[in-house]
Image 1: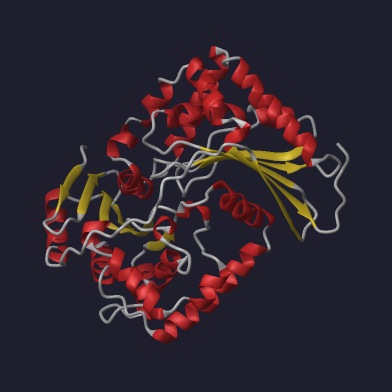
Image 2: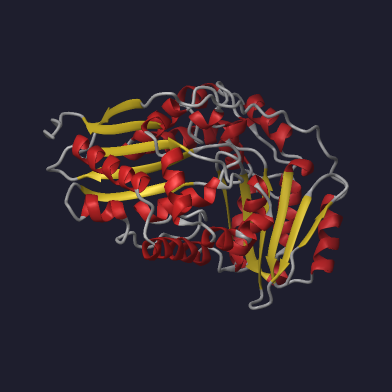
Length: 428
């Protein structure tokens, strides 16, 4: 069935998709705020606000909701990324009104009790400390910071430790009030409902919430990189990692699709959906030439759909008996091969098919259908989702070669190596 799209008088965007295969509804509220909207001093505020949204309102005290949703056979959660924050409930169709009432209420009525803010500070600092035990997090943070000079994409979603220690309750509450308004939100639902009846219920809950001022965006255009930047990250562990992060196009750039196919060919397709797993990348060029030749024990690529140009990264786990330099040389050799010669039609068809399959697997469930209704609207529109498979199929060998020549140049990248403390570098 077609998607019902409308906007309330207060600016709330609504997307409703009827799916009558099972008596379940997935309900999402997306807020156009993420680490892209943070400045030094309040990095991590969007993620922290998401945590505070589970601390209750006058109407929905914190301890009650999890029990009520679980008792009714549903599940709920939230997530924060660089461009957005999203909240969702997937429940039996006859119980979804609880999710509707909850999100309408906490969009504007969250308490931000000072004691709860203090408690959550401890939780998030502990979460950050846990991340710091991960070599990949450490390397990713250093590479991202080196890749951007001005744009807020340069810092991690969880925020800098100094900001987590110094941010106040008022900082968080002002961030919440600035961005949590109906005109800065998207309500997306998929499942077993009548669209006209559901729209009327949404109007009852949201129509009287006033619109807020359009929030100012702090994202600044980045100047192009003119030379390769190198990062050496050191820390605990036994494994060496290599990450090559290239400045990549945003999701609405036509080149996004050509680079997506290049990613599938080189490293296996990237998963754009935050719920579903990946598929095997054993037919990819980098797996065959790094892992099968025992230069690395694993390799993966990552290309995300974002509002502004972000990064395409290739990450390799270096074999214990090989060096980072050997892995980098092999990686550069495979990229040069793609730049010099377009892929054969059979190899391209396989790469496209794998990317299409991963996309399809991540779009099957009712929860995933509702996810895509809102997610695509964050950085483009629902037509982007509807046309994605066709856009991949339209990519030609020449398109893939051109994407590699344009975006996978050394001067467009940050090259990072994680070197464990006390482990001597293997000779090349």
